Image: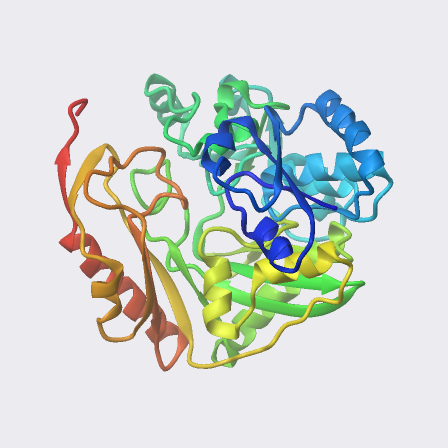
Length: 428
């Protein structure tokens, strides 16, 4: 039997079941209601991924059942999966590696020790300590949840005065509107209650931001695919939050030295964290002086719509590759490369009710669109923090070059957003 740990995405469980494998999905207790109609695999609930006493008891219950693997593609679950593997004596990512991939302070220390360029940073206990860290590092700074992801609990803090404004707005408290499954993760807590404290780093003046998707099997690189975000993810909206322009385009040979530098830094970061077999999602920054920095690295597949982008561009099925690794098979990639594809998220106005939205099929008929995915429908109340998880929909467009594909995606997303009608909620 294969044990899969997941928060809200059942794609790995389903991929294994489709291959005739027995699966037990370990999921957050708050997610049980969303999986209650699934009879394809067994379910087991946990309230907190970092409840190691509960994980030890679960390992004891699982041991007599002959567990073949413990797997996850979810950053929230990496440490818990490593703990279960340790108790069950199974191969896979170690706890030390999982901690380095999920604790930003440990991660930055490992990267710096390996000579990978990272922004100067300090650890802080609470939001009250950000002021001293900012004075030491030089303003502006970025304050982050050490276990955060998707830019949740990530704040650009410009000055002591701006820090006071954020305190007054209670910006460092818990987030409302997150998916129920995130209740088992520390990310649902505010910076004021972040386990292990906060990472504060010097804010790099970002000119361009990139990502890179890697997969290795027994140290052999299967792919290393650089991509470019349409805009830096921080600091382009109200001065302390997430940029509304979310999306990505995979780079090609026309990007030359730029793409090569992203690959170089991504590989160095994966080496620094000891990646032998598995995925990595790497964030890379280039500043306004031309200097390059490694932002973060996660030892898991890229999230949000990146797997769908890889499928459209290259025929890469991330869930199938995760299943290959769980079964101990060499991952199989049926490469398919066509015209460049770009993804753009359709922004949604927080705190409002959707009254009208064009369907995905209508958007799919527009020029250059290869796929469209609707997230909201009439009656939906858009809630939750502004982040890379917030969108009304997603569009995927082709173009003659990555730059043209990205431009088509941005234009189409803007067209879709303008066609969405909303009204204030009763609370508003």
